[in-house]
Structures are given as C-alpha cells and as structure tokens.
Amino acid sequence: MPSFASWLLTSGLAAVASAITANDNPDTMAIAEALDAEHKQGTVRGPLHGIPFLVKDNIASKDKMETTAGSWALVGSVVPCDSHVVHRLREAGAVL
Image 1 (cartoon, helix red, strand yellow):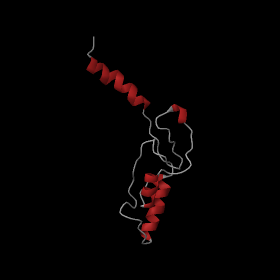
Image 2 (image 1 turned 30 degrees about the horizontal axis):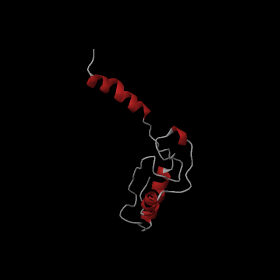
Image 3 (image 1 turned 180 degrees about the vertical axis):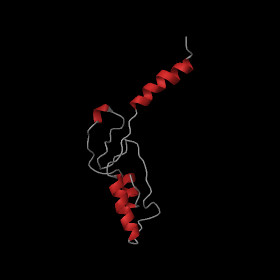
Image 4 (image 1 turned 90 degrees about the horizontal axis):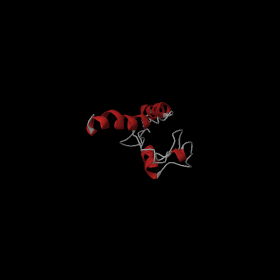
C-alpha cells in the first residue's frame, strides 16, 4: 500500500494540477506593441512602462479574460470595468 505522501504526489496533486487553467489575455501582444510605439516616440508612462504583470482571476479586468474568482458559476461573466489596482497598473504602462 502506498504511503499518503506518495498518493498525494501522484493522485492528489495531479487532480489539482489538472483543474488549474491558464487564462491568457489575447490582447497582450497588441497592448505591448502599442506601448513600444509610445516608447519609441519618447512617451513613457512611468517606471512600469512595458512591464508585464499577472493577476488572479478574482481581480476584475475589463478585457477578454474571465473574472471567475475560481467559481464555475461565474464562467463567462463580463465585468463592467477594471479594478482600481488593474486600472492604476495600466495607466502606469504595465501590460496585463
């Protein structure tokens, strides 16, 4: 009989890992290219200009990514606007 630790590594964590999905922003490259063009023209929004960042899916972001907070009930929901922190990061030129 396998130990609990070996079961956890082979079965338990595998189940968790299979439930985790990446939610990439399909607009990331277009946003980054626009920020690069701004930078080439001499416009820099701040120290985060062009720096990528990630947020959990419980932080609202008004784009093509879902904000589900890990809940199947919220799959497909559309948020009306960016959360305050996402808004401020985007203003500073960061790329989600």
